[in-house]
Amino acid sequence: MHSPRVLGVVALIAILVAAVSFAVVDVTIADGCGADACRAGIPIVAITFVALGALAALVSVIPAVTWIVEAIRTARAASNEDDRELARAARARPVYPDDEL
Image (tube, rainbow, N blue to C red; front, side, top):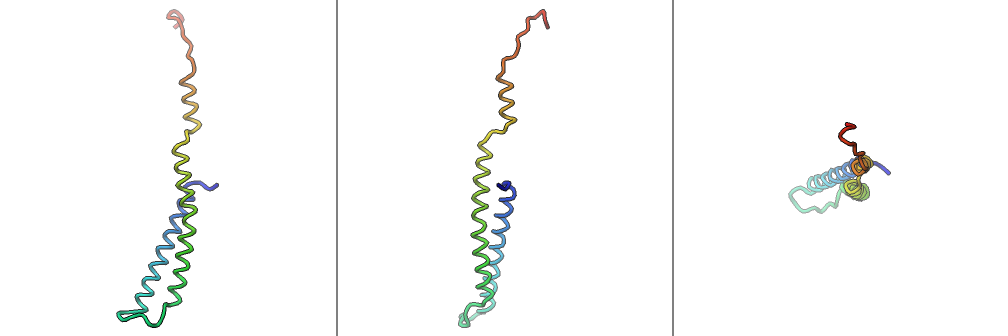
């Protein structure tokens, strides 16, 4: 299992790739159509970047969900050090008479 940090980075990078891809699609279609109606069809660059953006969006779902699940699981679980500290506090401490101190 990857660390939560790696999962978060992978998810954020995939989301950024999807956002940039969809921005390229928007600019390509706006540039190809101009002010009048778009009659020439959709440019191949736009179709390519739509596919890339959709793939990146799909790829980002699995690491993002896993990242969220790991973060919730980590927040709920107590660490071993917390358990040791509670055990130390619960142990009976020896009682010394005043004359032994």
